[in-house]
Every structure is written in structure tokens, then in C-alpha cells.
Length: 370
Ligand code: SF4
Ligand code: FES
Image (cartoon, rainbow, N blue to C red):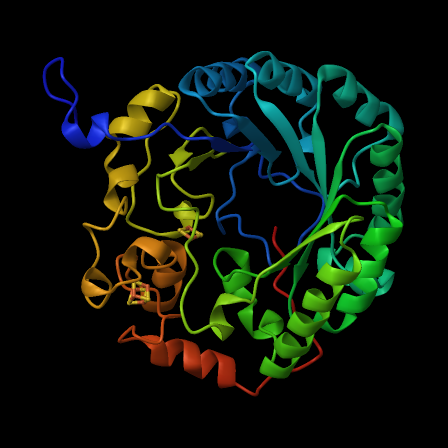
């Protein structure tokens, strides 16, 4: 999809710039959550982009029109240069959101990030029950530390989002999880159902909730949205596997968002590296703009032209864009297939079999992320 001559190709000329960026600063993380969406092959510290390389990425992103950067990982606070990275992102006019497990932060190190211009913190918790939370993250003492960090964030005057990835092992505690987030004075609670790729796919047998769990949790979340109005926003979406149609994923592949992996691969989706066979361009070899406009992987699932039937002639194709490419790959081995979550997909049987599976032990044998 390269531009020829001096005039860009019409599809490149019509392309809007991205508005959001996920900066995966490192894959290192003290927690080992079995639902992690990082690829199973993790990047080592020696392969990570340097401070200067990230600063250049942020400058380019700001110049392209990107409005916000999510500083993530792995655990971004494992990077000693995080204050410099926050400052570099702020001076590129990016709104900075730190996505953190919190356990490596101290009051002082958070203060340095605030001084550098940090705008927002999204803190992940694994459960409201300490013992279960620590079993899920495989990190002793982590839960109490996270509660303390939440207090420091609010004291520092930053807006706090609490993020809880939910699954079979914590979904029955949703009422208490909502109360916990209210008690922490979070502005927002994201209740994120596990998405099954990366490490989560290896742990699906431990994590997939039952239909009755999902129905109960959905009712609790909907009632809480009303109850918490004016105090805390609740983000809750019915999980894909229990819906009849898939969700629009990433607002469209290569449409509004991109991620940069720790080694500098620019990705149309944070989980795109779980799709084997795709190739990714590196910010070490090309500018962000060049990759956004020219890279074949970004064009592969942009828009609707790539779609097979039944999506191609479906009246929902512009609404859901055929669902999630990473999920289609994880479930069918073909990233260009209709998302099997859709009842119209010829492979919907795969999802039915998973949801109805009743071999669901409550004694999880997690395969921990390493
Ligand atoms: Fe969406 Fe494709 Fe299903 Fe239609 S057939 S609802 S476009 S996933
Ligand atoms: Fe990658 Fe949906 S998570 S396209």
C-alpha cells in the first residue's frame, strides 16, 4: 500500500491520523497474572527501546496528532527512566495515563511521576479478596500495597481508574469489587472480562466463567451503574463469548489506535503479535507516520474490503467490522475469518462448545505468565 510518486494513493489520503497510543515500555512485571494479554514469548530487558528512542516515538506521535499515550507493559514502573519518559510524552503534548499494577511504586516515586507531568493512573487489582487476588497475580502482599497506592494517587490529586479483569475465579465477588473501588475514591471502575489470547488463552480452562455467573454479574454491574451515578463511572461490557454478535474491536484495525511493543514493533492492536504469520515494522527502521500509512499489516484488516462472507454482505459490517481479529485467530487459526462469537459465523460452534463446557474446576491450576 505504498504511496507512488509525490501524490499519496487515495486510500492513504483518506486515512485519518491515530488518536491513541499504547506504549508497552517493557514486558518485565513482578506479577504473573494468568490472564495477561502479552505474547507468550516476552521481550528481554536488553531488547527494549532506550529512553531516547521512546522520547523520539512520543515526539513523532504528538506531531501526527495522537492525543493520549497509555504507558503500559508488562509493568511500566519497572523502567527506572519512567519519569523521563512521562516528561518526554508531556512535552510532546500527549495526555499521559499510567497503567500499573502499583506494587513497585513508592509515595516518592509516584511524586516524581506527578512532577514529570503524569495526568492519570489506571491501577489494576485482581480481586476484592486479598488471598484470591494474590493467588491470581502470584505476588504475596500485593493487594494491601495496591490499596495503599490508590490512596497516594488520590492524595496527589490525580484521577484514578481501578481496573479489574474478571473471570470465573473472581466474578462472584463483583459486588465487593464495586464497593472496594468506591472506597478507594476511584473516578472510574473498569470491569474488564478476560479476552482469550496470549497467556489468557493458555489458561482459558481456569478463567472462562459460567453462563449463570455472567448473567448475575451483568445484573450487578447494571444496578451499580445507577447506584454509583455521580460518584464513579462503571465500564462494563457483556463478554464476547456470551453475546450474539461480536464487538467492534479497537474501533477498527489500524483506525484510531496503535501500540508499540517493548522492542519497537508498531502494532495495529496490542495483541496483534499473538497472530503468527503477521510481520511488523519497527520504529527503529521507519517513522510512525510511514508505518501508519504504508505498512501492509496495518492495511490487512482496515475497513471492510478484506472481509469474507457472511460479513461482506452483512448489514452490520460497518458497525462491528467483523469483530476481533485476534479472537478469530485464537479460535479458528485464521485471523481473516468472521469472529466466531458471531452467531452467523460458520465456526460459531467453537464458541458454543467453549461456553457450554461444564468441566470447570474451582481449583485453578494456573499457568503463570513468566
Ligand atoms: Fe458482524 Fe460479520 Fe457477524 Fe455481520 S456476520 S454481525 S458483520 S461479525
Ligand atoms: Fe486484536 Fe481485537 S484484540 S483485533
